[in-house]
Length: 398
View 1 (cartoon, rainbow, N blue to C red):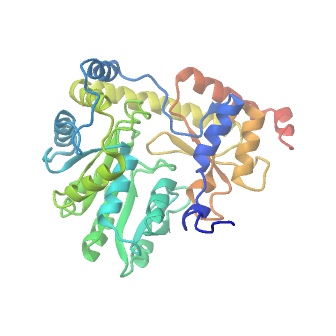
View 2 (cartoon, helix red, strand yellow):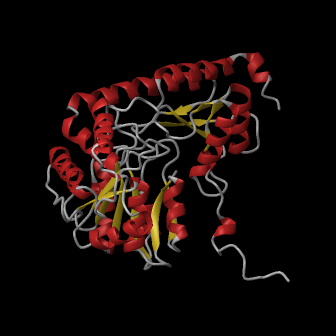
């Protein structure tokens, strides 16, 4: 007799693998160049790598405190004071996490209740919306102006209800590369204070900001420190996405509960890798970060040129290392079909823009990641350039 007690949870039937992960799997199977996922496969800084290896060798291979090793928390606090201009307490306001994703999950679990609403901006990073929905928190989506990705502050005000508890900001943003301006952040800060809202600010791409733009932390604005939870990490900056070391900075009223949930779900970030990331903060000079920007600016412009030549009109990002490009010329009824056709024809994997919009949105966009090693990016751009060849375009009729 069939036991009807065995079934999926109420959430599971609607949960599917993210399109980013799906395209990465397809890229691996096809031996393609993966411009779909933000893997960031450039070389790890030597001091970061050596410190992690040394930590393993001397036995730093056991659980850490739930808030992370003191060395890394002190390094994060020093970095904040150096770059943001104000001090944070490494014992009470800094929490080392299992990536910025783990930081976001634990903070949302500690500070939001099922039925609460949180405002997100579209195009959005799907993990933010998915994480909230998995907890019964309702994502309320406010679209940014298409192409310029400018904030409509009136639309934000209209989205606030009695159930709104938080605003989620990603700056520099994934997938658009948008860097929120001071004016936009100040306007959002005013709304947060008026309605007594938390602000969750994902700043994982803070070191990838291009000329003409400036990264500003919401927590540094007047009246925002106590209500802002800032997430960041080392995955992108040090090219260690597989190490899963991130952190958050928050008011000491919130960190104990956030730490409880992080411990419950993740225990701690990998111990030796925390030492590696601490060494990066302690030892890498400003020139490392300056070179990082210069290198990615060059890669951005190279990719923009290749996409333009291919007839896939790109939107120039202010920061991060992603480009949204108009995929209208490609065959396919949806962005997912267009991405798969592009993969099949050129061996270059991109992500359907629909992964970053509500249902029906983003079907004319693909996202390309240019955070790649130079030789691989060169080859990817060569393949994209080939789309301008009429024979290659004809081959698309699949």
